[in-house]
Amino acid sequence: MLGLRRRAFSQPGHEDAFATGAATTSAAGVRTRDTDALARVSPPKATAAVPLPEVHGSLRPLLEAARRTRANIAVLPVPMVWRSRSWLPGNFDLLVRTPVYALAHLRLVADLWRLRRRRVLVREFLSPFLLLVWPLVWPLRRRCYFLSHHNLQAAFRGGLENFCLRLLLRTGFRMALLETSAGIEALGVEVPPAHLLVLPHPSDIAPAKGPQASAVSALEPVVGVVGAIRREKGSEALLEELLRLRANGRLSARLLLGCPEPEVRARWHARGFEVVDTTRRDDYEAALERCHAVVLNYRRDRYYYRASGVAADALNHRTVVVSPNFPVMRSQLTYPVKVGCLYRNLDGLESAIEQALAIRPEFEEALERYEAERGVEATAARLDDFLSKGSSR
Image 1 (cartoon, rainbow, N blue to C red):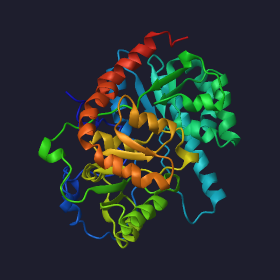
Image 2 (cartoon, rainbow, N blue to C red):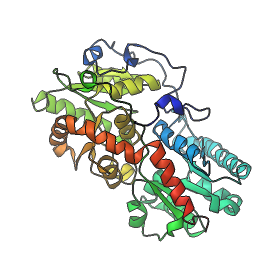
Image 3 (cartoon, one colour):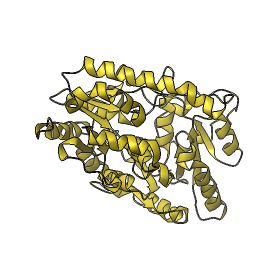
């Protein structure tokens, strides 16, 4: 049997990335590959403000796996969701944001001391702010691991992030990484084995809906770009390339854009994309499920050593992923079995999409093995095994 259903992870304090209001069921929320329903989506209005999401909903299987460990590991986020004030100059925006982030890390200190008898996995922290409070955390360092992909990627840009992460690592900081330790090796910092926890990105793959529901439709397949539109995700260039391939007759597919930004949906709907408002988690998941392939185009300087939450969510909804050939995402799509296709640059995108649309029968079978290696139970067992091998040193 596959992993738990997603609703089992809806615990207080761990709501999803796009669950900014009460869940509703709409035409966009029907969880099926009903490609005709996409045509019924109304053109978006570019007037409403985008609600602030809670980030990293794809980590919910990790929360459940931690809860199931013998040590009952606690997972602590550092809540730092911030909407920049466009009317403030950049320096003033940073000035206002700084005390908010500092306070969030001070709250982390209080939470760590409250949980001082438990193992703790910390996520979504900032290296400079953690270093500021590190003397208060240091006595607890042997019981804490810090999920560090954003921090590690930022360290490669040099400057303050690099200095802070290196100093933390030299003073007992314990790091958790998803998929691979390639990033820390490339950074050139030696980390004792007991200080480095590496896990495959946990999964919770939805049960198959039967041959008729899961088979690729005889109609044109749907190729989608789903998730918040940010510069670091390279979405604009990807959307342009998909339109170009279709216009030149090299991509026979319906194009879907699912994102929470109304002005982005309006712009690309006018250019021929079918669009879905993914502000709510239900609609985000429905958009992923309607796609036969979800395509990513993350920037190398922002995602080379990071896993993809969108890729994890797409796979959980039995949708093939096409991704840049970066070390962490390569592992995410190929270990222990191939569940997606990789490309090196946009010139190779057409071929990667063709391969992704052609692997559907093998993909459905591969998901069973993928889940067996990465599901909640397997992840909990990995955590227990790691902790049992002397990580208290």
